Amino acid sequence: MKKTIYLLPGDGIGQEIMAEAVKVLDWMQGRGLVSFEMHEGLIGGTAYDQTGTPLPEPTVTAAKAADAVLLGAVGGTKWESLDYAVRPERGLLGIRKALDLYCNLRPAQVFPQLANASTLKAEVVSGIDIMVVRELSSGIYFGEPRGVETLPDGRQKGLNSLVYYTDEIQRVARRAFEIARKRQKRLCSVDKANVLECTELWRKTVTAMAPDYPDVALSHMYVDNAAMQLIRNPRQFDVILTTNMFGDILSDEASMLTGSIGMLPSASLGEQSALYEPIHGSAPDIAGQGVANPLAMILSVAMMFRYTLELPALADRIERAVHRVLDQGLRTADIWEEGMTRIGTVAMGDAVVAALHD
Ligand code: NAD
Image: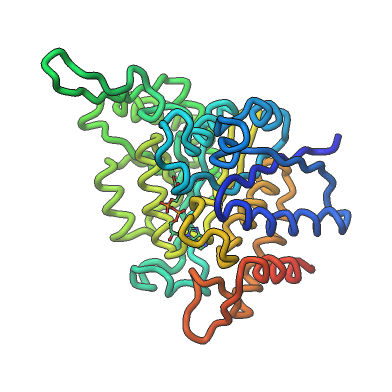
């Protein structure tokens, strides 16, 4: 049966970079290398403007039916004064929850051509190849009770709850062990077990699973130390497994080691669904100018070929094309340096397509 890919460009540069990803998909399909249906839907501020909600019901239905969802980005200054319940970012949290995407994969890899883009010394970051596995559908971002209430004495109280059940820990840990198995076989689970009981449970649960993966070396690290070690000696890490909030912060830190937010893809996996998106947001400061870097979006397509469509050769082909384009000295503004050729979003997409040949 034909696979279905559901496209959600979203807001701001999401629209611009999605158009370049579609060029790559069209090229693959045009060459008969793969066959799928593509549909497009609404999410984020654009969805709010047209339907009054950042996550319309038809979007959820179509996303659930698709084999994979490709998402651009959501958000923008235009919607910042809206109530939290209908902010574009709610659409993103909502679709992750609706698809039960509990496992977020964020690779942080340094492209040798861009080693100077990092704010850290090239000798510290060169060769970095880290996969952050972040629990995505539970933890403090979803825990109940939550909210802000006004007390009888007039003070306000803000509350969020860090909650994990063993099965929620086990399913994401299983993915992390399996990914580590296919890499350098080192898994570092990050928690704050010395202070938070909930993450003490996390540590115990992950430790209890280790005997099932005797080929993987499991270690544990407190989150404050992990934040420091990522800067001090990032090459010590292979796969990092952590909770939703710690993963949010550490994966941003890890990605910044590479120096370029416009280069990094991500995958969010559930049992039935998968969503692929660049790690960056909708970049309202450059939206509409044709200068956004589409490579994170295009590399998200590569991840989709690897993890959902199970066509690793096509994933390799896209990644090879990106390397070729960088070797040619072509750069969007965010990764440009002296001596390189500065090009815009569309030209970068065209260059990748031109480099997709064998
Ligand atoms: P951002 O990632 O949109 O932008 C941060 C900086 O990086 C900006 O200077 C931007 O121009 C630059 N940048 C990002 N992607 C780029 C690309 N592909 N090419 C070139 N430059 C790029 O983060 P922000 O400014 O904090 O947030 C802007 C909006 O995006 C907010 O509404 C926020 O809520 C939303 N957001 C959405 C997502 C998502 O959809 N997954 C993630 C983060 C932020």
